[in-house]
Length: 307
Length: 307
Image (cartoon, each protein chain N blue to C red):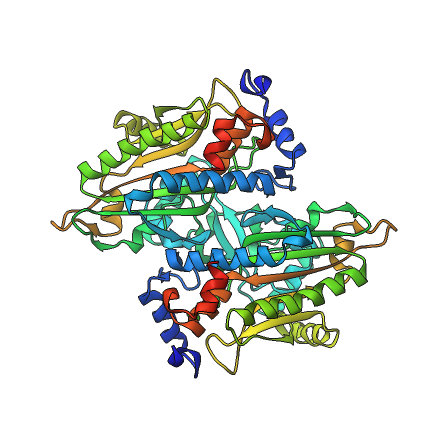
């Protein structure tokens, strides 16, 4: 697949290749496509590799639903930083009369959103968010390490296949003393790069910033870069010039420790960091660099994924 | 665990047992709890058993995200039948000025839902919904069979642990000629019962009806029962008197075939049926009947799940 591993796909070409090979299944809205059996097999194998390389770390495993307590995004300033990406869940809370009105509107093709009210849940915006309230209280001396594979949501419909509204992140969260948290983050930065390179991907890491909203957001992004709070592992998927972040590392200092009352045994606010592999993006990077047919991938890559 | 397999738990007792054994992780909102590692292991093993007993059926495998094209629930009359259960995704679509307003409201603890607008996606209300638009067109003579494990959403917060806002369903969808569809449904009714009984669960099947909304809903439910369009496999989890539906079978006649233009080769609207195992409910039924510690489960049950 030399043609696939050099040059730059356009978005449509790569998307259509994924569709043509049954790897993804188009739907009417952008960024919410289905995944086919082969895509899922690669995703599960890749996720299993992450489990394998971290098996001696003693991470606690949790799974959280795609909807979470809405107060989490209220308490963490998510709606200050990323109001445009958040998805909140609304439902109908009326009686027979209002239900008739809703039905009439839907059948007439008229807007019906104003007949819905906000619920107590929102879509999970980042795989780690539901875990912080769960680890409230005093940590053991060595801190805690938790891993999850959760569906996350971002309201950014796009024809670009790596920019999804809904996708899975394999996440690790470390909470404890600052030194331990930073050392753990740095270890994983190497591990993540190593894993992707072993799979034949031209990965590199870089300091990064989040897509903060609006004018104030530009300052937040500059501060985040200056303090090196965010790193990403990048692989070209759609373009060589603008590689795709397939893995993201965030150091939160004591922000979540303070908000969710997570303490060290010395009663100081715990520091936290998280890292997440964007599983669909990692899988797409493999299809981009090795071709659309896993049976034709390099033997070393196949041996690592299907040992 | 004879004490666990006779009599009736109250909701709180069973919920607290699940929590105490780390099987589920409480969160602030009802029906959105996290799942622990042992719970997930049982769920994955149970799902793998379903794959195993259906391996010769030739089902096509898809995975869909927890959010789907909103027009699907508009076109299928879901909002007529279950307006109270649907969840729609709202997002912020303003600029800097409105973002400031949103932020101020959130920090003041004031309502902010009116600053959100409806998006093109809703939460998936039933695992099979996203598949019907995908199989639009003319089916092969033998029809099609598709399987998925998807997260679904129902807005019915409850302290009762089997009544979740967000849960996974292992679903099968059969589309084709009416005779083939009904025969397939009947075969699975036996298979589902057989699988659960092999796992030591006192399962039985019954004609059922959906929780249609309001006054009109009672008539819809009566019609559904009279026509035997819905069956459930039931296992006592919370109470002996009101067993929990762990598996549900729906025959749609040509409803989805007409709405989504799915045809037989003779150009008639295809008939469809679906069946879904509520995976969390099946797992909870196992914990209810065999106890909270899988290592202590009957050898035959363990051998089936962990062969």
